Image (cartoon, rainbow, N blue to C red; front, top):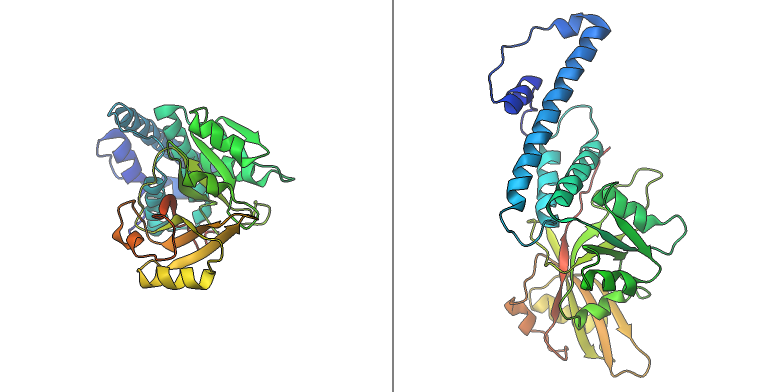
Length: 300
């Protein structure tokens, strides 16, 4: 683990100048000296934030296609948590950087959210605010199709939707959506959840494809005969080198086709050759997207 950055390092990074080593007057000067030292540190942090925002402005002018890159953001937060030391809880570090990343992403392209949230207590809206910041524009809908429509029409940057299950099968629409929409993130990004925080889980969908973070999961959408079994599909996926983590199988009454959502380990692209080795599918599997694996462990 890297050594923590000192207040001297922060000040030097903010000003670009070497500063004389401070004496330890703030250690022995009582409360006024401690407050003065905190003010100095706050100014240095603020200088760095303004410098960071200036760099983000240059990035925005570079013409890159998407401002929101959840894989890149996940890598940033993992790196910072990995080097973190001291009494400040890591979860506080995550919350600070999530707000910072949301603010700078908004600078680049007018980020807006469409949230499907019909439950009491609006847990998915809380997740969206937690991840995308308190100031990001947000509208809520009772049905996932409405949120997906906003993204497909460019009225929202991303949709936040319930995690797939036998009852939540909005993902079937992604199998035939043109232009394509992609799963790009999973919420929440950090666990375990402190008391009082929403325990719901959600997926984020956007028109841009996901970006890899080095620790990823992917989703495959399959169309199979309606009598296909989970056991057979799991065996075929494993034999093809695709480790299945979860599977949702939807059989519509009277339909000869079953739709299957499979979560597999790793980051998959459309041209992955392993997708050619599944015998039970009626057509080539569709890579519906993926997400950076959330932080686990003690973040308190």
